[in-house]
Length: 282
Image (cartoon, rainbow, N blue to C red; front, side):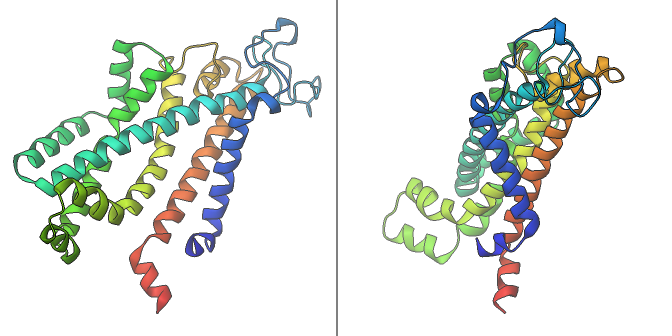
């Protein structure tokens, strides 16, 4: 924590991430309007600092008269729900397979590794589009798709870490006193690779947010009228000249969120770097 807090960029990223999470959690209490409420009399109202704008709609309205500020805030809920849930699924699945493959090796290792190679042959966005086209558009389907599509990176990193750890003296000692393979993997190996998993999970969050926004932009994400950042971008592109604010503010929200997650992830990676730890001690 001391090394992490010394990095101003990591602290800035953490502040951004916490801010986004808090606004998502307290969205009903922050937003002045229902994000799905249609009011055609107020369509394409500009932000309050422009001529014709008002504080009633601080960031303006979209083509259906819906409050852009409220939709941006509520849109964070879907993006964070999909990204966090997918990351949990992919990390649990990938770490479990990586532990088994690295510890037992042999045929099991080969099968898991080849499955990972096959999946990596398909770009994430194309694989997601294909699966969503079959399963249909919904929040649950998005979570499942991204959760399954991202397990390979966790499995590979975990497998490599297990291969370097499983022959250590404390693992041999655990075997000598009769510990089961499951206990060795869970209580002796996993705690020593946990830091690497946390760093990967933090950095993968940003990629999932962008992927979810991309699918929503293509109309394959969360179905309307539920607000999502990608969906707002897709709707706003038709009014980029007359109502630039409709697409601009969700785009800024995506940019800031991804920037915050990346800065925090980079800080975690540096804080957990053993070479850096040794140099600081010296």
